Image (cartoon, rainbow, N blue to C red; front, side):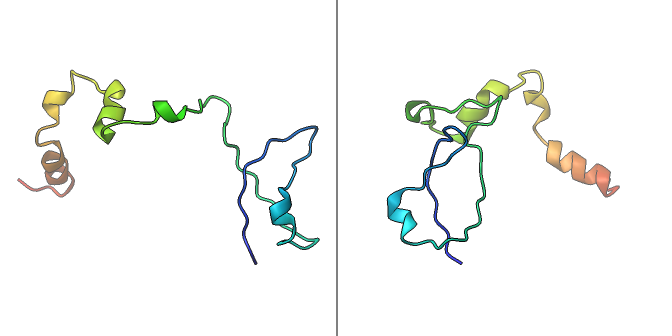
Length: 85
């Protein structure tokens, strides 16, 4: 089995296979469709994707009230789970 990947838009219920791939496939193919822009998700432009660090990209989800509790949180959770004093 050979895999071919390409991006396409569905137009009138049809997907056009690029000609460069037609020579590689026979008359029987398996189609797996992946939605590149599921409803509710926004496709970012290339300029929007540049982030200096993962922490910077998640900064908008930070809860400043919980930041002081982070110190030692993992150690406390493990001690509680395994009943370690």
